Image 1 (spheres, rainbow, N blue to C red):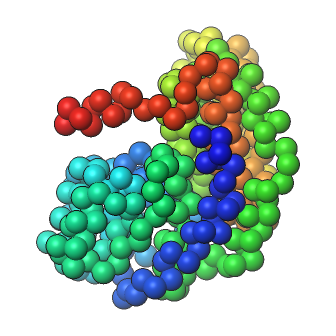
Image 2: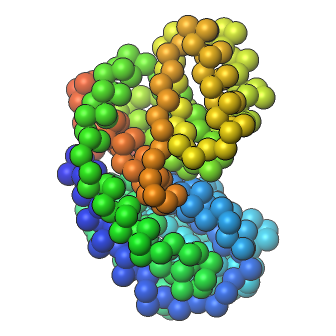
Length: 317
């Protein structure tokens, strides 16, 4: 797992050309269908493209929304190609004559693509955990959306992101966080703009470390979850992921929330997300979270690659 995590900048380089031959018409809406490690790219892309001129919907279920039709662009992502929820969404998209892009390594999705003559199939490298393939999911989609002029992520931003990921210091910070979290349940808080990042941290703790973790977003959490600190659980450890360029009012809100959490007796650490672009901020934050979950897994003496409970459930289904 550590080799996959450290390979992220090289994976970005290898993923950039995967979507360049996909030709599509301009859609009226975009849908991302995927589960788990194949579903998180939709969350990340929605965060990244918050100013996209067409609406973006994320589906983590068996069915597409009723609004999906021939004017929709549907990205169906399944690393294994065998995810039953995603396969069902592919079939529904075909019935509704939506523009369809499949991203997979192989499996049933490849067979469906052949049978239905789906031309836009992006094949990603095989033999890695789906959560480790995030670059191969996100960057081909960015290439496609750039070509449709629905994204304006530049090559400069991508290169700066790769440079930022190659900088030193991530391992030391991740090991420090892992030590702080050793006997805790992480609560990951962030703003609406980085909810996908917080969800990725949660999933990394779940799958790599085999612990429970939860996430929420400002300002919504201050309107409900904050009251939980009237009866705090000592095992909770709050991680706040905050953009260094956040607006003044949000910074004030975060500081006041931190004060309340600390007064309740729970520990809280704020991690400032830094970078020259939102793309760099998102992927450096993801990288730190993945490393933290790995080192915490080592402290718990568990195998970060193992997903036996998930595999058992899939077999029974």
